[in-house]
Figure 1 (cartoon, rainbow, N blue to C red):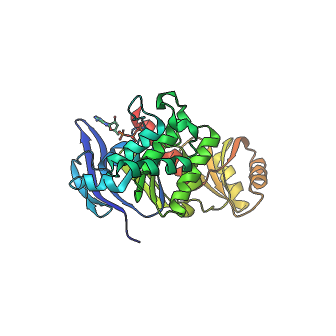
Figure 2 (cartoon, protein in one colour):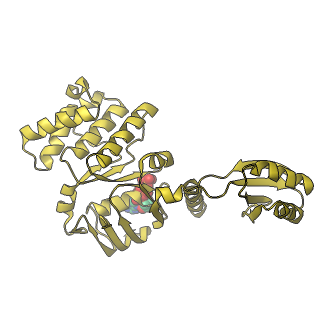
Figure 3 (cartoon, protein in one colour):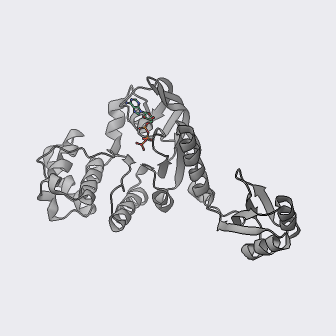
Length: 311
Ligand SMILES: Nc1ncnc2c1ncn2[C@@H]1O[C@H](COP(=O)(O)OP(=O)(O)OP(=O)(O)O)[C@@H](O)[C@H]1O
């Protein structure tokens, strides 16, 4: 499968801050989630892909164009929905979307026609004629989304598109993204720190933390359930407990916390067996929590590592 975006050893420094530190990245067709805690470098990466800022070092191609040098061509091929609001005060919703179309070179009448079509798709009704400053957050997000797709780009970059939306609006927006991908063949880079958004619609996931790619894989691979696993915090003799677990054919791994074990076993009644092993070893269990799936685990770990590094 040919990559839509290919970046090699990208470094981006802002004076004393290194925002991206040796990023090698390929983005394949489909919907890709870009996950990362605050300050991970997601916005910097997006600006580099769009050709809005220069890299300190490294090279790459975006949709067959050279990074930065072909910035204008790249931006014509990409629909970008920024995280922050960006509209001209005094305009109505339809004017905002028409204006976005005109900026991409679509003649005004055609931009107006497409604007109406896209706002229908986005569920904006008569409110489209109202001044955008009177809109709710959800309505502004819809118009921002419409403005990003009005020129029918082949690739969409959506920065925190569901932020501030209520559950119903969030569901509707995620559905629209999915439709654009499955029925209209668009590829999407969805930047977010909301894990369930990625789990709901993405084909692939990239995790960025502290300016480095920690993971780039297909979601179905990451979601494959491994053996049933629980995390157990206990009080009592560690070695007796581990021996007792081994006698019950359960695998125990020490986590980097005192008296906490990750316990795996290919059996359905894992929890019962752990309680029995604890009782046999005269150990008291403080907590027994089913393990998260691997994506959640990896994401939590990267967030924790990043927050430890920043504290
Ligand atoms: N123009 C700038 N000048 C100086 N430092 C910057 C600039 N832009 C970003 N940074 C720093 O670079 C690092 C990465 O920032 P970036 O905005 O790319 O992260 P992010 O993952 O998008 O975070 P968030 O989710 O909070 O927006 C941060 O430490 C940030 O403070």
